[in-house]
Length: 303
Length: 232
View 1: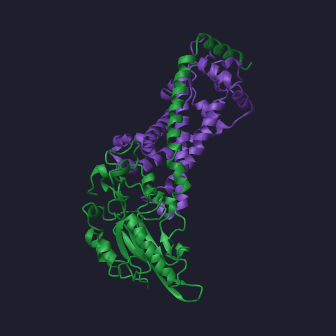
View 2 (view 1 turned 90 degrees about the horizontal axis):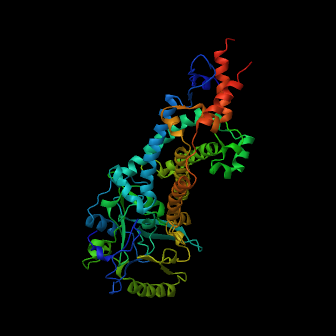
View 3 (view 1 turned 180 degrees about the vertical axis):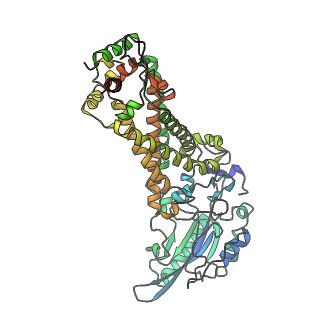
């Protein structure tokens, strides 16, 4: 939330381009890489997130699983999701995925948002909510392909992971990265993260995970939070990570060409009315009509 | 029919012509109040909705005290509009069934738009355009009502699957577009056909107006007046 406006490349509900004076001066596009194959589910990242961002979620209830809280909330911006999966050999696999905002290059939340500047995307790729502009309509939820934004019950504003945009803007890595004890979380330029992921995938393949791969879904033009998965062919195994996420065609239609077209059609209707009046003129009743009416009243009198 | 008769003032202009109707009550005070409550609610709902419809119109939200207030107020204004319109629709329902002469009227729409009413078939209380508008409004209001609940994030949206919310969002915008366009036509028609605004503000029309624009209805009014003045 502290980045300069010159680093903003996209704002929600804005029809004009953002300041472009800095475009092409060598912005580094960043990414967080989450290596699910190294994650031990310790939740240090969850704690670091609430510490750095000063968030305190309500104490929940234990329903007999490790996942806690049970879902992302307005105060829990990241969450370890624990999935117990039986593989084809009949062995149990405990697939743990750190969930949170994926920071899509083509963000559905930003596309759906009706409030100017409530959602922005920085040149480094981070998608950030500016709560002071948020009106609480929840359209970001409608637009998100990953079910990430949450509306707070306290203030009716939308919240999600900021990728620690405040830390990144001053050269620090996100708080969760700092806390990870196994090196499952790494942060850097997106190119570096892809290289690192490629090494990890090669290593995993050599150890029998032939479907290991990088999750950087092209349907949303890639994400600035990526996963290394042992089973990249079945991302759904990881607590429902979507296989081919993309902005819903309904949302594209809703927020696409239909809006300016609808606006133009409404304006045109009024303009056509105006020129009908100018060309044809009003439909008035004259003395002849009154006389005819009287005549009818007389003739219609029952004998 | 009795409703028409009661809503009918047989101002008799002198002893010489007892059948002359000075003015005809087209809308009672309750009808007018009901119509304008609906109209005011529509304007507020439309302006607040348009603020969220397109970024170019977001500035309209300042008329409601800013974006969050617009988001809070819009659904309640919409509910009020639907409620007010429901009374209006029940009251006018029976006058709005399309009849064969109405379809003929529509086929001659080119005569309608150039004010050649003398060539058109007789019109009842409402012409075919008004009747179609009525049913379009009924459908739009129903659509807005149901989809509005589905996308009402503060209280209801979380009860519905995300795909349903997405479809409801676009249907809500579509219904609103059709509604706003229809009301632009409705408002222009009232400006175009002189005497219509008076009918909905003061409640009465002249016999000439009724004869010219709604002749079948005018005839009914005459019969109703005659049957009331006749000692049966």
